[in-house]
Image (cartoon, rainbow, N blue to C red; front, side, top):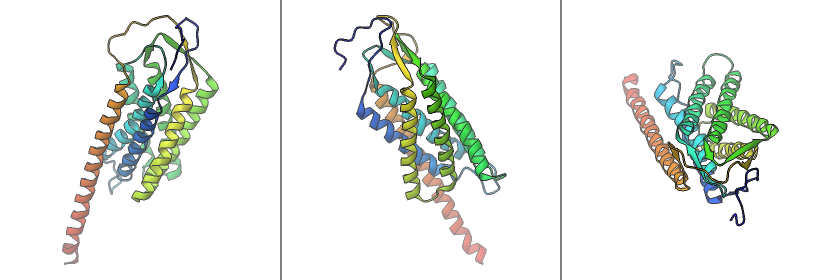
Amino acid sequence: MFVGFQPVPGTVVPYAYDWPMVALSFLISVCGAYVGLRWSRRIRLPDGRLDVDRLLCASVALGGGAVWSMHFIGMVAYQTPTHREFGLFMTLASLLVVMVLAGTGLAIASRPRGSRSDNVVKGGVLTGLGVVAMHYTGMEAIRSNTRFDWDLGVIALSAVIAVVVSVVALWLATTVTTRGKQLAAAVVMGVAVCGMHYTGMSAGTMVCTTPTYAPSLFAIEGDSIGYAVFGLTLITLLVILVVEATRTGAATAATAAARPRDLA
């Protein structure tokens, strides 16, 4: 694929995308968005208090599944002729950042007090900043004999996209209720999240810094890690979806059982 490339310092490093891996990044984003939407509409109890368990599940699905897993798999899909690995602690930090801020954004957007549109915008801006922080923290996690030269204009564009996408996502999360609409919304969110990610990727030009690179401790590498993240995320989302269905079914059954007593 990269025949003839020589890792000479100062040389721009060519790249190509592994399109099957790109497709997986889109698929996992849609799956995470769908599961997140299923949970998001129930994160408030009838008295307005947060259901912490549901908020946690929604944060994992949206932040960890729809955004972070898509980002990480998309990073693995970015193929270069140079050695590359990902710093473990920085990678985990990027995951934690987006889950915490996505959860906080959901909590703000779903507040029963105040204007719903204002709450959604405030939560969306916070979540969008979390997405941006996650993306560039994840980029910083790359360990290689290269550096990135950044186009600040494209970075700004990717940040705007992230905030807009997050506002739309939280609006959908707090308004869409039927499964068909949730699935359609998840596809839209998947397209938008991928658009933000690959726009952000285009902001950096990879430049060779040294001819070779010595692998570091506490790092992960290899194309297989992308498939592993896809598989683990999919299993996690399925578990969350089953738990959601079980809790919803139990609540519906309890409500139905209470009706005859109320009528009596």
